Image (cartoon, rainbow, N blue to C red; front, top):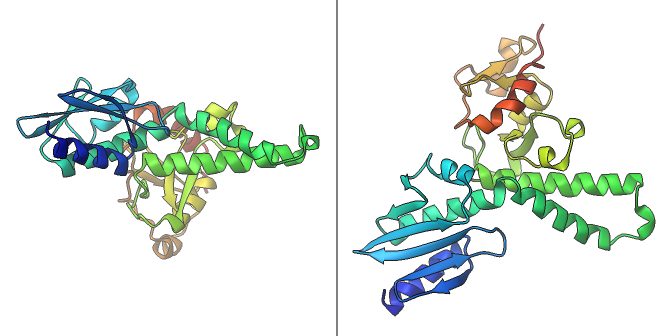
Length: 251
């Protein structure tokens, strides 16, 4: 690996979620980030980039396997552009998946509380702060997990995207459930409003379920059709989606 190749890999890592070099050897670079625990070891072998993921949990590897060919914890990239795509997705997943979002929440909450008087402890103000910080953290994690696009339509306009809980925030038993990216979906505002009120849900294959309370004319105005489907669905969604589906409103 010559100096130019090394510099290009470092810049690609910095631009796509791995902002510093952890270890450097004559044959490889290991990249890391302050935002997540994942390390990415990159080697250049016969003009191909061998990316080995260190500290990667099985759940993250399974998620990457949806989009890329993964052997063990290694992904082969034909060029630097493909390497950048894999690094960006790996960093997004590492930042979104449990329990990284919960860790981020605790850090953000501590920072928020430091700005407030001590008298707010165990008050309604503290509860509101916890909820605001938690919902902001959940939204960021969902944007990372879904690649900044609606889980159904693929719309990638952040201003109209909402992080929808399947098991409502107030009904979650703990912060881990509230912040679990599998407890809901990133949806456009109209789908979010319907999902939040149990007027739509999704079946075990990701197909949309529509309440009989939504008339055919309203479905047309809302852009809701029976062919809508989640872009993907994992086993980790099941326990939350089962609860949500059971509450789908019927006429």
